[in-house]
Length: 220
Image (tube, rainbow, N blue to C red; front, side, top):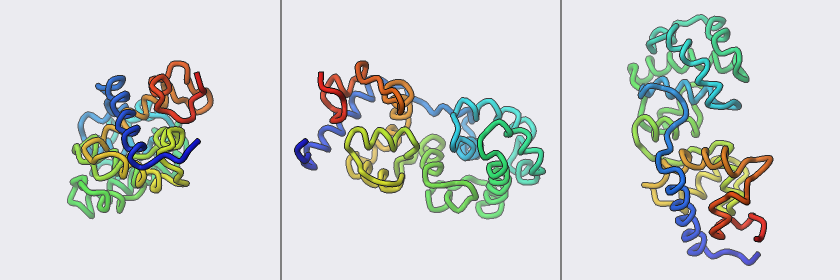
Protein backbone atom coordinates (compact mmCIF):
# COMPACT_ATOMS: atom_id res chain seq x y z
CA UNK A 1 0.00 0.00 0.00
CA UNK A 2 1.35 3.41 -0.98
CA UNK A 3 2.24 5.80 1.81
CA UNK A 4 -0.78 7.95 2.68
CA UNK A 5 -0.27 11.69 2.71
CA UNK A 6 -1.11 13.65 5.86
CA UNK A 7 -3.85 15.50 4.02
CA UNK A 8 -5.47 12.29 2.81
CA UNK A 9 -5.21 10.70 6.24
CA UNK A 10 -6.90 13.70 7.85
CA UNK A 11 -9.65 13.63 5.25
CA UNK A 12 -10.16 9.90 5.86
CA UNK A 13 -10.17 10.48 9.62
CA UNK A 14 -12.94 13.07 9.26
CA UNK A 15 -14.91 10.69 7.04
CA UNK A 16 -14.54 8.01 9.73
CA UNK A 17 -15.84 10.49 12.30
CA UNK A 18 -18.88 11.21 10.15
CA UNK A 19 -19.66 7.51 9.78
CA UNK A 20 -19.31 6.99 13.54
CA UNK A 21 -21.52 10.02 14.17
CA UNK A 22 -24.25 8.62 11.94
CA UNK A 23 -24.14 5.21 13.59
CA UNK A 24 -23.59 6.24 17.22
CA UNK A 25 -25.04 9.73 17.45
CA UNK A 26 -26.46 9.08 20.92
CA UNK A 27 -23.42 7.33 22.37
CA UNK A 28 -23.10 7.82 26.12
CA UNK A 29 -20.76 6.64 28.82
CA UNK A 30 -21.65 3.03 29.70
CA UNK A 31 -20.65 3.39 33.35
CA UNK A 32 -23.42 4.20 35.82
CA UNK A 33 -22.37 7.19 37.91
CA UNK A 34 -25.48 9.32 38.33
CA UNK A 35 -23.75 12.47 37.12
CA UNK A 36 -21.35 12.45 40.09
CA UNK A 37 -17.74 13.17 38.99
CA UNK A 38 -16.26 11.29 41.94
CA UNK A 39 -18.35 8.19 41.30
CA UNK A 40 -17.31 8.31 37.66
CA UNK A 41 -13.66 8.52 38.73
CA UNK A 42 -14.03 5.44 40.92
CA UNK A 43 -16.07 3.52 38.32
CA UNK A 44 -13.52 4.25 35.59
CA UNK A 45 -10.69 3.25 37.90
CA UNK A 46 -12.49 -0.05 38.52
CA UNK A 47 -13.07 -0.67 34.79
CA UNK A 48 -9.42 -1.47 34.05
CA UNK A 49 -9.03 -5.05 32.79
CA UNK A 50 -12.78 -5.71 33.00
CA UNK A 51 -16.02 -4.60 31.37
CA UNK A 52 -18.23 -1.64 32.18
CA UNK A 53 -21.07 -4.13 32.65
CA UNK A 54 -19.15 -5.89 35.41
CA UNK A 55 -18.35 -2.58 37.09
CA UNK A 56 -22.01 -1.58 37.01
CA UNK A 57 -22.85 -4.75 38.91
CA UNK A 58 -20.70 -3.87 41.92
CA UNK A 59 -20.94 -0.09 42.16
CA UNK A 60 -24.55 0.09 43.45
CA UNK A 61 -23.47 -1.70 46.62
CA UNK A 62 -20.30 0.38 46.80
CA UNK A 63 -22.33 3.60 46.64
CA UNK A 64 -24.87 2.24 49.13
CA UNK A 65 -22.16 1.41 51.66
CA UNK A 66 -20.12 4.55 50.97
CA UNK A 67 -22.44 7.31 49.72
CA UNK A 68 -19.89 10.12 50.18
CA UNK A 69 -16.23 10.71 49.46
CA UNK A 70 -15.60 10.92 53.20
CA UNK A 71 -17.24 7.55 53.79
CA UNK A 72 -15.11 5.81 51.18
CA UNK A 73 -11.97 7.55 52.41
CA UNK A 74 -12.46 5.98 55.84
CA UNK A 75 -13.56 2.55 54.60
CA UNK A 76 -11.92 -0.67 55.71
CA UNK A 77 -9.88 -2.19 52.90
CA UNK A 78 -11.28 -5.69 53.44
CA UNK A 79 -14.85 -4.39 53.16
CA UNK A 80 -14.19 -2.69 49.82
CA UNK A 81 -12.37 -5.80 48.59
CA UNK A 82 -15.42 -7.89 49.43
CA UNK A 83 -17.74 -5.61 47.48
CA UNK A 84 -15.61 -5.53 44.31
CA UNK A 85 -14.26 -9.09 44.64
CA UNK A 86 -15.71 -10.15 41.26
CA UNK A 87 -13.52 -7.65 39.41
CA UNK A 88 -9.98 -8.35 38.26
CA UNK A 89 -7.17 -7.00 40.45
CA UNK A 90 -9.74 -6.29 43.16
CA UNK A 91 -7.16 -5.93 45.93
CA UNK A 92 -5.18 -3.15 44.29
CA UNK A 93 -8.38 -1.53 43.01
CA UNK A 94 -9.91 -1.52 46.49
CA UNK A 95 -6.80 0.13 47.89
CA UNK A 96 -6.83 2.73 45.13
CA UNK A 97 -10.53 3.49 45.70
CA UNK A 98 -9.82 4.41 49.30
CA UNK A 99 -6.62 6.29 48.51
CA UNK A 100 -8.30 8.15 45.66
CA UNK A 101 -11.06 9.31 48.00
CA UNK A 102 -8.46 10.40 50.51
CA UNK A 103 -6.58 12.24 47.77
CA UNK A 104 -9.65 14.15 46.61
CA UNK A 105 -10.21 15.28 50.20
CA UNK A 106 -6.59 16.07 51.04
CA UNK A 107 -5.44 17.58 47.74
CA UNK A 108 -8.59 19.16 46.34
CA UNK A 109 -10.90 19.92 49.28
CA UNK A 110 -13.37 17.23 48.25
CA UNK A 111 -13.80 18.46 44.68
CA UNK A 112 -12.79 16.33 41.71
CA UNK A 113 -10.27 18.45 39.76
CA UNK A 114 -10.75 19.44 36.14
CA UNK A 115 -7.33 18.94 34.59
CA UNK A 116 -5.41 15.83 33.59
CA UNK A 117 -2.38 16.99 35.58
CA UNK A 118 -4.39 17.22 38.79
CA UNK A 119 -6.47 14.09 38.22
CA UNK A 120 -3.45 11.90 37.57
CA UNK A 121 -2.05 12.82 40.98
CA UNK A 122 -4.81 10.69 42.47
CA UNK A 123 -3.93 7.02 43.19
CA UNK A 124 -5.19 4.67 40.49
CA UNK A 125 -6.03 7.47 38.06
CA UNK A 126 -4.09 7.26 34.82
CA UNK A 127 -4.38 9.41 31.74
CA UNK A 128 -7.19 7.33 30.23
CA UNK A 129 -9.29 7.59 33.37
CA UNK A 130 -8.61 11.32 33.60
CA UNK A 131 -9.72 11.85 30.00
CA UNK A 132 -12.94 9.91 30.62
CA UNK A 133 -13.74 11.91 33.76
CA UNK A 134 -13.09 15.24 32.07
CA UNK A 135 -15.16 14.39 29.00
CA UNK A 136 -18.10 12.67 30.68
CA UNK A 137 -18.39 14.63 33.93
CA UNK A 138 -17.28 18.09 32.84
CA UNK A 139 -17.51 18.10 29.02
CA UNK A 140 -13.83 19.03 28.88
CA UNK A 141 -11.66 17.61 26.09
CA UNK A 142 -8.04 17.88 27.14
CA UNK A 143 -7.15 14.68 25.29
CA UNK A 144 -8.62 11.43 23.95
CA UNK A 145 -9.26 8.47 26.25
CA UNK A 146 -7.37 5.54 24.71
CA UNK A 147 -8.63 2.23 26.03
CA UNK A 148 -8.15 -1.19 24.42
CA UNK A 149 -10.86 -0.53 21.81
CA UNK A 150 -9.53 2.87 20.75
CA UNK A 151 -5.97 1.56 20.74
CA UNK A 152 -6.89 -1.38 18.48
CA UNK A 153 -9.10 0.61 16.11
CA UNK A 154 -6.50 3.35 15.68
CA UNK A 155 -4.04 0.70 14.46
CA UNK A 156 -6.58 -1.10 12.27
CA UNK A 157 -7.47 2.18 10.56
CA UNK A 158 -3.81 3.07 10.08
CA UNK A 159 -4.15 6.22 12.18
CA UNK A 160 -1.34 5.27 14.54
CA UNK A 161 1.58 2.90 14.90
CA UNK A 162 2.13 3.88 18.52
CA UNK A 163 3.29 1.21 20.95
CA UNK A 164 1.44 2.65 23.93
CA UNK A 165 -1.77 4.57 24.63
CA UNK A 166 -0.02 7.91 25.06
CA UNK A 167 1.56 7.65 21.60
CA UNK A 168 -1.78 6.67 20.06
CA UNK A 169 -3.53 9.55 21.80
CA UNK A 170 -0.96 11.98 20.41
CA UNK A 171 -1.50 10.67 16.88
CA UNK A 172 -5.29 10.87 17.15
CA UNK A 173 -5.23 14.37 18.62
CA UNK A 174 -3.13 15.46 15.65
CA UNK A 175 -5.73 14.06 13.23
CA UNK A 176 -8.89 15.40 14.82
CA UNK A 177 -9.91 18.93 15.89
CA UNK A 178 -10.33 19.29 19.65
CA UNK A 179 -14.10 19.63 19.51
CA UNK A 180 -14.26 16.03 18.26
CA UNK A 181 -11.98 14.48 20.88
CA UNK A 182 -14.60 13.61 23.51
CA UNK A 183 -16.72 11.65 21.03
CA UNK A 184 -13.88 9.44 19.81
CA UNK A 185 -13.86 7.20 22.87
CA UNK A 186 -17.65 7.19 23.29
CA UNK A 187 -18.25 6.01 19.74
CA UNK A 188 -15.21 3.87 19.08
CA UNK A 189 -15.87 1.79 22.18
CA UNK A 190 -19.30 0.87 20.81
CA UNK A 191 -17.83 0.24 17.38
CA UNK A 192 -15.18 -2.01 18.93
CA UNK A 193 -17.76 -4.04 20.79
CA UNK A 194 -20.18 -4.34 17.88
CA UNK A 195 -18.16 -4.37 14.65
CA UNK A 196 -14.38 -4.13 15.02
CA UNK A 197 -14.19 -6.98 17.53
CA UNK A 198 -10.67 -8.02 18.41
CA UNK A 199 -10.94 -11.75 17.65
CA UNK A 200 -13.74 -11.72 15.09
CA UNK A 201 -14.06 -8.39 13.26
CA UNK A 202 -17.35 -8.06 11.40
CA UNK A 203 -15.86 -6.55 8.26
CA UNK A 204 -18.84 -7.58 6.12
CA UNK A 205 -21.07 -5.36 8.25
CA UNK A 206 -18.60 -2.53 8.72
CA UNK A 207 -19.64 0.91 7.41
CA UNK A 208 -16.00 1.98 7.26
CA UNK A 209 -15.11 -0.97 5.07
CA UNK A 210 -18.15 -0.34 2.90
CA UNK A 211 -17.01 3.22 2.26
CA UNK A 212 -13.37 2.31 1.64
CA UNK A 213 -12.18 3.96 4.86
CA UNK A 214 -10.42 0.98 6.43
CA UNK A 215 -7.10 0.02 4.81
CA UNK A 216 -7.09 -3.36 6.55
CA UNK A 217 -10.59 -4.47 5.48
CA UNK A 218 -10.74 -7.42 3.07
CA UNK A 219 -11.12 -6.35 -0.53
CA UNK A 220 -14.67 -6.72 -1.80
